[in-house]
Image 1 (cartoon, rainbow, N blue to C red):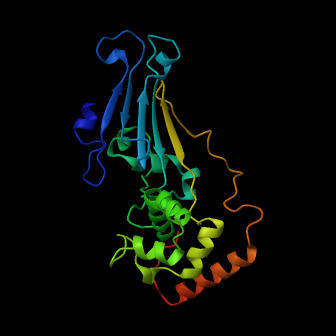
Image 2 (image 1 turned 135 degrees about the horizontal axis):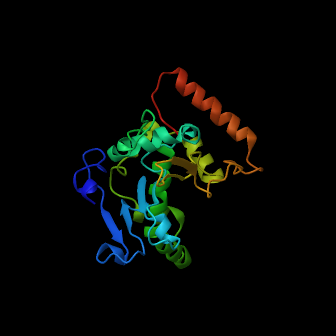
Image 3 (image 1 turned 90 degrees about the vertical axis):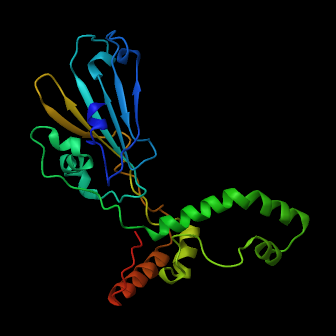
Length: 241
């Protein structure tokens, strides 16, 4: 907890919240302590707990330090499956304090995935007014009346700029799903009594999972790739993924 108080879990000058779990924090009873940093929905979530004591050995010094990376405001590269230690080391300042750590790698948090932004806005808009739209349809309002009564007088949602989108791309995304899926990655580090460090990926990561379903429209994907190529050659700096 002192490491948290002293800023060793800070990122971008922000200090994530922390939480202690277990009765052993107040009265050492051998049941084991657990320390959380961040929230499970955040891009980084830390679990530190006494693994040996969790398994029943009240004298064990076996501690496990886990970091869960979630897609959202960070882009998780495939390189993390090869260079696990580097991304672990770069996650928080405290990770660089462990012995024999590799050169740290950090995720790029500044790139905003346009597809993800649009899909999120659509999701929350549907939750906000979807049932009202159903009611208006049931009462006999036509589509133009519904749109006119619900749309704002001016402006667009924060983060959505029409000049950065293509109608065909958005329509394909609504029909087939947006191309931004990334796995959530858990990286675990085990520190045993001998100081041996071991990494592993979460058992939830499925290497066989396809980003596209087998019946995905191949022709639509070809046209989409042609569009991206055209944008690239026009030297327009758009980030669609």
